[in-house]
Length: 441
Ligand code: FCB
Image (tube, rainbow, N blue to C red; front, side, top):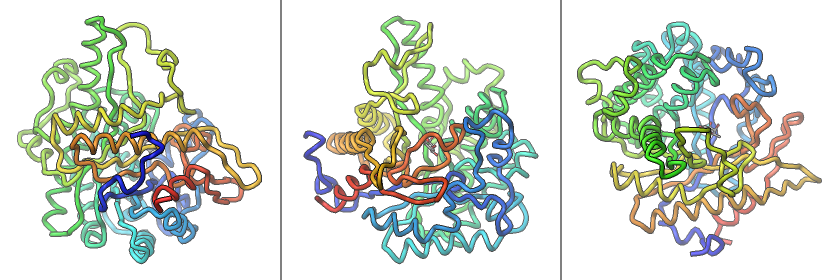
């Protein structure tokens, strides 16, 4: 079916249509009402780490403007909203006392969404770890599994019955590899062994949190969100094929094997050698809890080359402002492969979107490239559904322009344009298209 002819009616009635955000990227109010510092507050203060030397102090001022933002979400006609809780807002030190003012903020937000019939999809850890826990070694310290489990349990106890889903971690690969190995994201460490230990603790804490939260009997679906890309060899050269297999092991099989098979792939363990994580007896059984859903964040595909770095221009395809190739078929292939190899009960596309250089001109933001990107990836999701993959949700990243981590405010992913001087929100044409699509026009 041409992507232009696709309509909402081609999807199941209970399909979830949403937009996504995360706490640090939109909230601002970095030290209001008892919030403690997160590792991203600290990281932004280091010279040269953020492209435009910005930080999350104000961001989209969502902490104050949330009623208007809920109206925006509602106005799009989505039936689901994915956001995250800032752990240091509700527990400033990551252990010890709870901050009631922080919980009150999320309580109001959830209530406003409920009133409008919008499903609430909550992420516990979208990267803004309390700095006090980083001071203990961050995710490389096994003690964090216990601290995270207590935080998760408290959130589930308070809100679990009002949530459609709870995701433990957003993209453990990014947290650990970009944060602890490459050092380009918070906390800015460069150690492969710490990174792999962090990966293991993130996965372990996922399993522990699921066990504890399920013990409360809350109705929310529970799972995890991974950043996954299909990896292609740059050529038929056996060295490129081997590299692609290893890279797939590092980014996909490591996580999926652990979560769905209760084991780490041996070829990757061998490759890591001394940097392989220390795993205690029983850990992998704990990690391999049943997930009610697997969240997939998809933006692009990757190529592996044993020689010179791969040049994205050689694909001839369009490239976004992040330098990422636009390749919707990759989403269909990825969803089909996950279904074939691991059979998750339900797959949700929890993030998908694109940054382009948008211009606000007399109240209009024409973004035909983003519109086409979203449209074609919705079609790619539909193609997987047609092939029998149990895909149940599509969340566009993002509701609005926001703090794009190390890129600062320069990269705009929003369906809604934000003027960061005035905080004025303007629906881009992609948002108008999504709204029309959802209303059946
Ligand atoms: C993902 C993150 C999200 C956003 C997009 C562009 O890796 O989960 O917060 O930054 O990339």
